[in-house]
Image 1 (cartoon, rainbow, N blue to C red):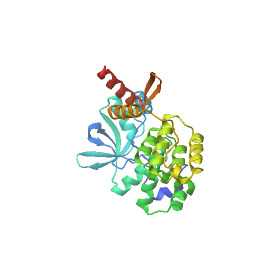
Image 2 (tube, rainbow, N blue to C red; image 1 turned 135 degrees about the horizontal axis):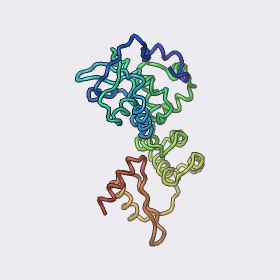
Image 3 (cartoon, rainbow, N blue to C red; image 1 turned 180 degrees about the vertical axis):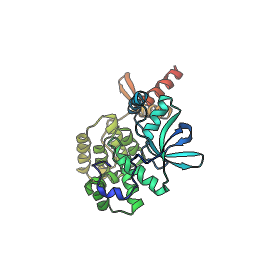
Image 4 (cartoon, rainbow, N blue to C red; image 1 turned 90 degrees about the horizontal axis):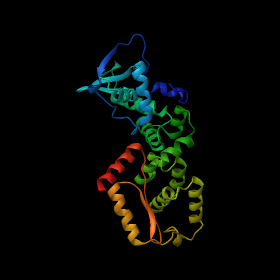
Length: 283
């Protein structure tokens, strides 16, 4: 168990350590399926490739933990090893088969992932909230169990109140945890979205966003309904909206008199490849 977690979590889940008494079996990758309670929605492709290279040289050193389900096995711990083995083209993977209830499976998935530092802020927030709901904990009780301050827990959980579009930006990394915390304090959802869009398009720092919010707070109530922006050509706005629908990503048209440029945002290597394919198809 990671030292970043409080010892209280040991009582919430059974041990996942593999010892000499455990029977290790080779299980076909085709018989395995991921944990349905896995809070991690994305896996870093580069880290999976690095792990795959290690597996090619040394094999899977630590067996994964699974449980028996209908039509095969469910991964309880070790999905990265499973994915890396798939990447290698391996047919099987060493595993230890154990019995777990659905509740234990959920607990393990949440707590195991909270020990990792590469979860995005929204995944962490969802995991904290799930632990609170599952174990009927207060934020104070959870903070003691995971070895974090109550304010740390509260700051993450508050992110879940943001509009879906903003949470998606946080998950992709186009808006940071600091940006998100600043936006949470704004009660008007439309204003939140407008400021989030400006943060992405103008590449604002957290400080830039905080200053924009302070300026809004200093205005009269009737002036807070919209941001002070340069007048834009409605035709350009329509084109941006059409391109956003076509490419399923943020599109900005920057115009200066009769010339300008079109910017397409991408959020991963896969996303870039998707956009390139669309552009080649349209050529």
